[in-house]
Amino acid sequence: MALLADRDVRSLALARFWAILGASLLPTALAFSVLSIEGATPSALGIVVASSVVGQVACLLPGGVVADRMSRRLIMIVAELVVGAVSLLSGALVISGHATVATLAVLAAIGGGAGGFFYPAFTGFVPQVAQLEILQSVNSLLRLSVNIARILGTAAGGVIVAVVGPGVAIGSAGIAALIASVFVALVHPRFVVDRQGDSHPFTDFREGWTAFTARKWVVAVVVAGTLSNIGASAAMGVLGPLQAVTALNGASSWAVITSALAVGTVIGAVIAGRVRPKRPLVPAMIALGLFSLPFLALARPMSITVIVIAALVAGISLDMFSVLWDTALQQNIPNDSLSRVSAFDWLGSFALSPIAIAVAGPLVDVYGVSNVLWLAAAFAATPPLALLVPAVRRLRAAS
Image (cartoon, rainbow, N blue to C red; front, top):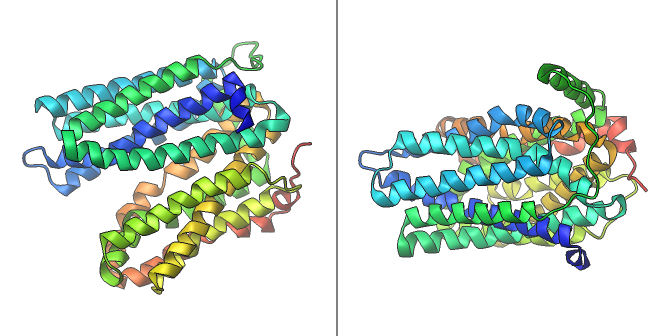
């Protein structure tokens, strides 16, 4: 927490806090907004949510190219302003009764696209602000601010929707994004990347692809993370809630499980700021594999106590992985190509999640929820296999 004395680190942490606080208001608010539209069906909600993901995925790789050629801070500010404007407009349409599924889907796609430009820029921007010796601690602080904001935002979203309506909740998310843009503008990077010379965007993309594929440890971890995310997305989005209804006490049990996971992420962010492994990807990949524990416990299913403990451990493990992985990327990839390389990482995180969620339901109809949960847990448990790649095991932390 001593890092908060640094004005730029503090501003960046506050920017992430407000951005995620606003983003965490949206799921509940959007769900009730779409379902309040006359004639809207549950599939309409899926269209709106999918539009956001598609917009984000479509803009990740272009976002990486742009972020390595322009001011990352400017890109982040513009992205937050776009998200804020889209949310305020969506909220106004819902409150006035003029919202349609089509308009909300288009606006969600624009907001998702802004996120696609934001994340590669953010990954490359952090090491421009934090010195090498405190980079891991700064990543830990940023994750801590994100996790606290997510917990508060999720809770606040339900309250705001219940008390004053979903349109106000969406508008509040827009205001939070605008506040985040102000805090980003207050950050002054420690150094500016030298981007001399002009090049073609396709040339930049090809160079980014080369920088990505030339590092076997990056490719191995991204592939392992993608496979893990397939299982985790299906389990968290569909299979876990279904099993809670089928074998536990329904929504109340699932709320306790997800709350334990959230608390674990806060603890994990704190721990990750203090550990200094010499070979960071070894504990990182083991930790990511432990994220499968609650899915394994649900598949059986075990007692609610065991599942909650597994979810707590999974949350701790997830954020330990996130901090160690982000730091490894930022310390070992040249900053002038970092955003392009990280764009492929973000693509693995987002691209296949909608597909995994979409196929989970039909698979349950055929094989049953427990059997599909075993499969999802198996996918989520794959990250330690990346340690079979020597480059992953041997990567050393920067001194």
